[in-house]
Structure formats: C-alpha cells, structure tokens
Length: 627
Image (cartoon, rainbow, N blue to C red; front, side, top):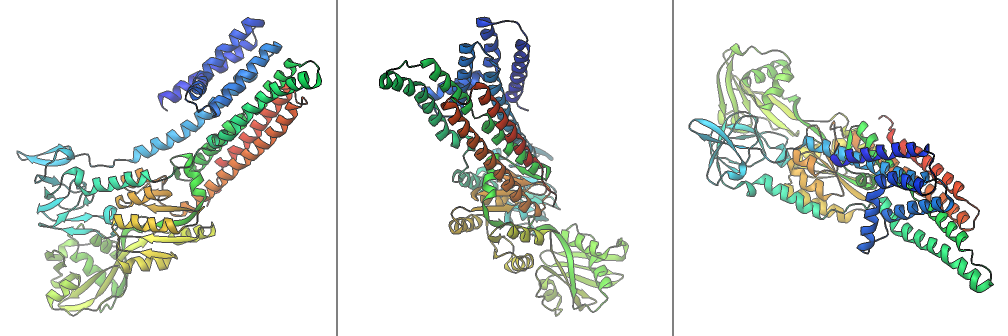
C-alpha cells in the first residue's frame, strides 16, 4: 500500500469517527455547522481544491466540481432548514472510498508486475587479476572482454574469443532449439548461456546492443498505442455541465417568470430549495462508486482466475477483441523438447534410444536430456568410451565397444553413412551403429496441453481470426498451426518483422474490433506494445514481455485468454447496466424534484438506494465460473 493510500485510509477513518461522534452531541445552530464542517473538510478538502483548480484552468466540468457543488448544496440546505449535515458528508465519504478502492486495485496489479520484472542485465563480468568483477553494462567499452558463466544472460553484443556453449535464444528469435556457439561466432545480448564459460569481445556499447534496441522499439510502439478513457470522465463531460446549468435555471427562471409574467411573488426561497434538492439528487454517488468498483471486482475476479490485468481500461479493450495473434514458442508450445517418433530403425526402438542416450550422456544439451527422458531408465555411463563431440555435427562414441554416432546429416556425410531424409518437422537425430545407418529420432517442441482447446474457445467467444507469428522455421510453424487450427501463420520473422506484420493486421481488422497479441519472449515486447491489447505469459515469459504487456497470464495456460475475454465482457456488461440504471433513476428523480414532488428525504433515499443496488451489481464481477 502506498503512502497516499494509507493517508486516504486515515482520512476516511477519521471523518467516519467524527461524523458518528458529532451526531450524538447536543449542539445546534452555528456550533453544529462548525462541528460538521470538520469531517467534511477532512474527507473532501482535496476534491474542493481540484474543483477550484478546474475553474481556474477553465476546465471546470468534471466529477470534482459536481461533487463539490452537490455536497456544498446539501450543506446549504441543512443550514437553511437547520437540518442534518450527514448527507453531504456521507456523499463525499462514499466517493473517496470508491476512489481508494480503484487506486488500490490498480496499484496492486502494478506492484505484482514490478516484482516479476528485471528488464536489463544487472552486470557484466570483467576479469581483473584472475578474479571476476561485476560492473554496470553501461560502463563496458567497445573491444572489452567480458566473461559469461553458465546460467547468465549475455549483457552486450560481441564475438566469442574463447569457449563453446549452448545458447538459449528463444526469448530473442523465437527459435525453439538452443543454438551451439563456439570461438569466432557472433553473439547477441539477451540470450542465456546454458553450458560452458564464454569469453566475449564486445562489438557494441550497451546502449546500441540488441536488448536496448528492442526496448526502444517498445517505447516507440507504446507512444502510438491509444488508451480507453475513464467511463466516469467521459460521462461527466456531458452530465456535469448539464446538471449545473439546469440547477441554475431552476433557481432563477421560474421566480422571474412568476414575478414579471404573472405578477405574483417570486418565491425565491422555494425555487432555490428545489434547485439545491435537484443538485443533491444529481450527485453521481452510484456511478462514482459502482463503476470503479465494477472494474475493481473485474480485476479481482480475473486475478483469482490467474489473469493479472494492469489497469481497468484494458478490460474494456479486451472485451472488443476480434483478432488474436500468437507467438509460438513458450506461448502455444512448452519450449521444451520431447522425442516424438523413431523412423526407419533397424534395431528395436528401445535399444536405438539407449544407444543415442548413452552416446549423448556427457552432454548437458536439452537434446541430450530429451533422449535420456525418452529412454526412461538410469544410464550406466561406464559403458561409454571415446566420446567425441563434433561441433555443429553431433557426437561419436563407443557403447559396449560398438561405434555409435548420433547427429545431423553433416555427421552422416562425414562418416560416409547413407541416411534417409525425414519429412517430419523438428530436430532429426540420425543414428549410425557399427558403421551402418540405424534410423533416425524425431525431437520437437511439444504443444501445450490446452493449446488446441484454447484456439477453439476463442472462436466460440467470437474471435474472428487467429494468427501465429514466429521466428521458427516454416516447416515447424505450419505443422503447429495446422494441428491447433490457427487460421494464418507467418514464420522465420525477426522482431521488427513481427511489428510490421501486426501493423498490417491492425489495418485489416474491423473498425470497432480490437487486436490482441499473446507472447512471452523479449522479441515479442515491441509487438505486445503495438497491439491494441498485449497478453504475456507470466510464469516463463521474459521480463521485457511482462513489462510491455497489458495483461499477464500467471500460469502460462492459453485457455485463460478466452476466460479473460469472458471476464472483461461480463465486467463491461455490469458497468453499462449500472450506468443505464443509475442515469435512468436519476432522470426520473430529477424531474420529480424539479416540479416539487420529490422532497429532500425522498431524494436521499433514491440516491442511497440506487447506490446500494449498483454496488451489489458491481460485486458480481468478482465471481468467475471455473473453466
């Protein structure tokens, strides 16, 4: 909770205590007015200041002015009749409670997002005197040698001058498979070093490196992204001046007509009383409480369902979604690898997998781990000798004294073994045992369990078009898209290409429809910002993607996308119900008050009754049906 929110809670508690305490004191007249003025100013001084500043800046007509006039009017009526001041103070109190709820809900969402973030690399390792020193990446000059250990992010672009390793580049390029890197290879910032220690000579400053450029793309995209305006503010632009001018007209025109047109006494007191009653009735208490509360409840209900919404305006945008664009790796697929098939094997499948797992047993590469999982039993590494890893080709070894080779077609060609091509998408591990071809193993990224159902659920929810953008190969991308039922697929894209493609789709979408992009990698951050609504994977997503997104799926389940859309539509439906209900009742009561049928007590009853019904309706947004 922020200091501002804590301060407001203290003001609410103090005003409530003073209001209750003064109600039982036996004071009347001016003393009573002064006493009640204390809790009124405690809870409402900032609203009065905002109203005054709005008048001074020639932009008077907002909810602050309306609240000020309505409550001051109620206080004036109480003075005029020597009546009760509770209504004026309670109206201001309820308004501030509603504002606090909205502030707390949005603030909590932002804090939860901030806890997940760590966008830029914190440090770069420089070797000095045989020891590693961590310094700020901004301080590293071009041509410096930095050291990147296993598990660390590469902080700055450069060239490897010593060492070899596997790099996880999925967050940058969308490629599902790790990339092998060795001495002489160029390396870009943002990828994760998985295995060996690397020494890198930097070729760029941190500000010009890949991660920095991508974050610049995010900022440029964000500047073009429109935001929904607050319902209350939009409504107040019309409602506030209309009510204020109507009240003035009600106080002035009828007495003048009576005095000059009919020649009868003006009865100024009666009409001023009706005008003040009119202002009290017009107080938008039901709207200023129920509408923020509806959004608060919608955000809370979404949070309970594992969907973190950064602000209430994003619920409105999400409810209008007609196009959903997906990244592939980590979004529709798990970003992990699994043996999917064994083809053309001349040995038993289990034995072929055993040979492959043993040959790869000395490697920490994800491909090796997937082979070991597929074999399913503990490996006896004493059976393996003469292991030789051939960079960019594969591995050779002796298993129980038998020569075994596992790798790509380059390795088969190098060993003079004729291989059989595989037409399936994925990484193909060709096997040679004792100098003869023994078949090949297909390893690929596996789809998320609910990915196909998620696409179907989106179409059932009224989404007109689903698109997949990925940096992965055309063959793999098309297989995944066809399997999941995606309408369109664009493959082998760089981060800038994804932004351009989304720009094209934004021009094609319906005028009143919105485009949502779902992604998880650093390369997705610019697209998440450029889309009408950005949705990021929170559990495995990159920091930049989480920062750029408007909505975060906390458990990475794509089924939550359609659920988030349903939650947003329910929330917006409740908001519109409250708007029409509150305005309808207000108009009826305003007419009755203007003609003198509705007195102050009836006005107060109608106002409070509408507020209670609207608040109860708003709370419904908290309750979300299970999938």
